Length: 166
Ligand SMILES: [Cu+2]
Image (cartoon, rainbow, N blue to C red):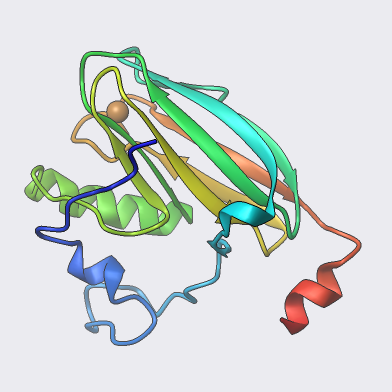
């Protein structure tokens, strides 16, 4: 499966999250693992197929996983437009969306961001380490406003202590 995303202009602000953040552009430094961390393919415990359409919708738009699970999101773009699936907090997504509006050609090189061209399939492998909600959205200009968003509910896991100590 092709999962290479060309790195040309990365989203500098988000890519640099945690390490150095320019004061003023962000309301505060966000923890790099607020929503989890990049997963390892061999640790995948759940695979979810997500469809993206030109109706500006994900199907399904809401998923439930258990804390600590490594999930493989197989994301299909069944539309004619480019769509993407970006995981983040509501705040991060909104900030990033504003940047995207100014730089629509921006390409992503981040494990939590996936851009899928029309008719293609891509995947994100992500470990959801924190209980709570992880949002996702399509940050293509206009799409987020049109309601192209969803959420992953992360249920607290029995092994949360183990995950936290890792
Ligand atoms: Cu879209």
